Image (tube, rainbow, N blue to C red; front, side, top):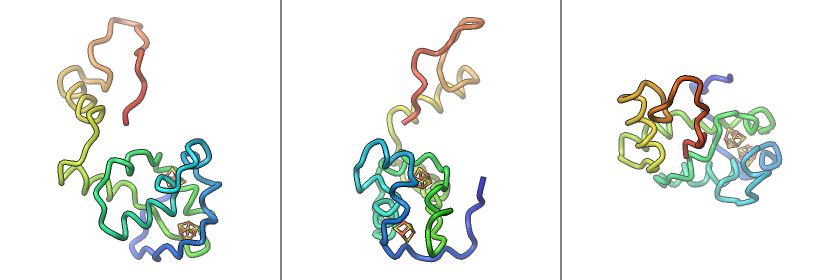
Length: 117
Ligand code: SF4
Ligand code: SF4
């Protein structure tokens, strides 16, 4: 995985990254595209939409300026500000109680729900 950059060039909003993003190619929503997330982050918006990002950094690979979405830092800030999804809270509670994100499981049981956002 690519590491976060010490200096992160700002997004110039060219949109070249959108088709490289696995989330945008499925949902086709600008506010969940890498460009949309970069604009929201630049404006200091604290929203659960940042949890839609897979942290894959395909956008950074194709970006002409090398903008890093820095999803890990943004999520850490969101958690510190109490901005989490109900699924995230449930997952963390399950890890603390059962040692896995899915909750109580029998030996060999496959979890029915595999989403975390
Ligand atoms: S890091 Fe996030 S915004 Fe960038 S391509 Fe991957 S899912 Fe999309
Ligand atoms: S993140 Fe990079 S590729 Fe995507 S819109 Fe911004 S400058 Fe363009």
